[in-house]
Image (cartoon, rainbow, N blue to C red; front, side):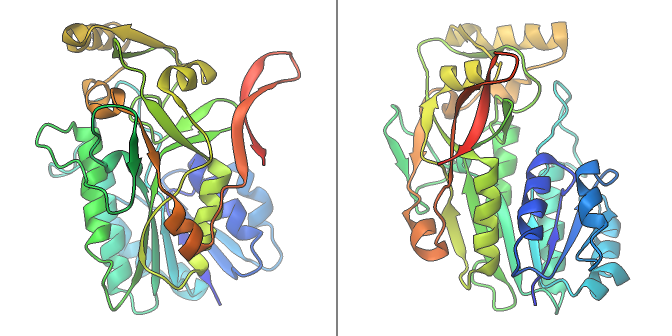
Length: 337
C-alpha cells in the first residue's frame, strides 16, 4: 500500500502531481494539503467512491499547524507513508518576502515538514522538489550541471536564491537517514500550457516586462509541469535515496522564453540595473531587486539528467513549444513527444 501526502496541493504544480498520482494504480490513497480551499479541479477526486483522495488546509510554515497536521486522525487513517513536498510557487508580485522569525516561509516549511516526517514512525519516504538554480554558474552558456556540481554559496546571493539553497541543504543533510528515504529533485524552469512559468527567479509571476543585464541572454533549461509530476511518481515508487536533476529536452535563451510567455525582457546596462529595478518597483510594485541579481541572468546552464534516467527510470515525455490557439494567437503549449 502506498499513501501519499502532497503539500501545496492547491497550487498548479501540486495539482498536477495530485492528478498524476490519482491515476496511478500503484497509489492507494492521496491526501492533498493546501493553504486555501480545495481547487474545483479536485471535485472529481473528492467524489471518488473509494475515498482515495482527501483534502486538508494547513499553514505549513507554522510549527503548531504542521504538528496538528501530522498528528491528525486524517493522516493516521489514510495510512500516509510517503510525503511529497511541493514548495510554494505563487509568490505575491512586488511584495517584500515575508519572514517568520527571520526565516523565509519556504525555508521554514522545508524544515518543519521534513522534521515531522522524520519523527513519524509511519512515514518511510520523502520526495522534495528543489531548484536547479542552486548551482554555481561559471561565465558562458556551457554550464552542464551534474548532481555533484558545486552549489552557489557566495555571500552575496540574493534572498530568493538563498532560500532555495537553504532548502536544498536541509534535504541533502538527511540523505543518509536510517529512518527516511529522501529524494530531492532539482528542477529548472517549469513550464505549463498557456504561458505559465514556475520556479524561475525572474519569470515566475504575472505576465509583463522584465529587466535583464544588457549583453547577456542565458540559456534556460526547461521541463514541462506534466513531466515534473511523472518524475515525482517515479521517485515515489523508487527504492533509492538521492539527488536527481530533472529536465526536459529543450533549452532556449531567456529572451525567447520571455517572449513565449508574454514576459518580454528589456535589456538594461548592468550599472543601471539596480537603479532601474528600484524605479520600476516604486512605479508599479513589481520586479523585486533580488530577482534581478545573480549569475542566472548572465550565464546559462543545462542539466545532466542521466542519473534520473538510470536510477529512477524517468525520461521526459513532453516537449515545449508554440501552438496556434483557436483564436489564431500563438500560445505556449506542452505536447507529448
